[in-house]
Amino acid sequence: VEEGLMSPRDAIFGEKLAEGRASIAALTETEHSLQNQLGAGAHIIDDASIERFGAILRAEIMGQNADLRRSYVRMLVGSVSVNDNDIVVAGSTAVLEAAATKGNTKAGPAVRGFDRKWCRLQDSNL
View (spheres, helix red, strand yellow):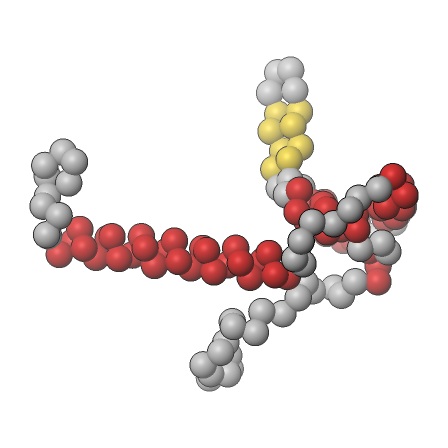
């Protein structure tokens, strides 16, 4: 539209705009759902919770179970960037905050919270 290749009234433009808006709405809903699953409000992280989380995480990562180590890394690490001078490990602070304030990470469920809106109209087996 900006370059004059099509008019804002073209059907294709309208369809693409509707798809974009639907995608934004779906992503917004997913964001709200994930925020609800992580818990509302900021948690207070003190030195004791950091020490406890660090000790638990260290014990699990240094343990013999490779699948568990891999799961912890996938849960906490979002991306790793490597260049000539730096290695940058990045992840979600919300996930790290939730994990650090939960206390014993073994006590939590194996699967994160259930989103009831996922199959609200019919059974997923249909």
